[in-house]
Length: 241
Image (cartoon, rainbow, N blue to C red; front, side, top):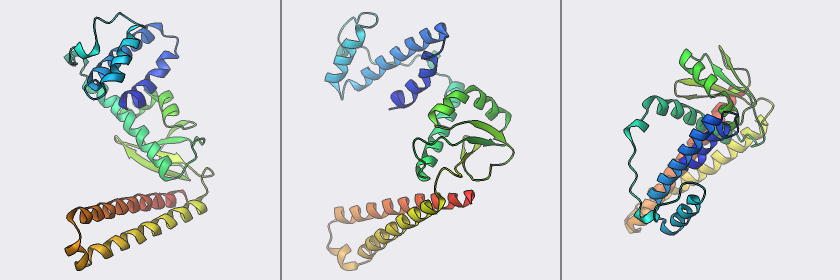
């Protein structure tokens, strides 16, 4: 999923650019990465990976044998770049936080609110400039700006030392969203109370199988985590107004 969700998405702007040298390098690295992925997947998905190995070999250099006989991947030391990993990690984590925020706030997929970085340091400003177009696409925002303070009607996330504010005023119905979150929190409260009642009953704990008790504890943990997430979303609404 990292290859499909992130690598290919990050490569698309290069493929769509006019830089032929960059496109050739990125194509080669994409093909190499896909080959290594097929090798790693082959022990658990032998048939489909063998088929893909053969088909992909038709588009590039001829394969010298079956995938099952290919050498196990070894990452060259030259490919290890801590600085590049930190750079892309910052981008991936930030986009992930913005996407999670959109989900929490029930922002429609078609909506593209503006994103503002609050008092970014020099390193963050450099990253914003380098990844501006990717942030627009991957985070689905209409624009990117910097400011000393978060705009009115925005909710904030902190990721990789950067504070980013997503402006949602006029994009979501605050009253309806508060009502939705309050209703769902109440449903979690009901579930939590029901499970706690069971686990607090000595007769149930003594007679139930250990697996059943563990199942109830797992339900309780899941409900508490869900409630906490919704409470965070409800608290964020207060940032908007």
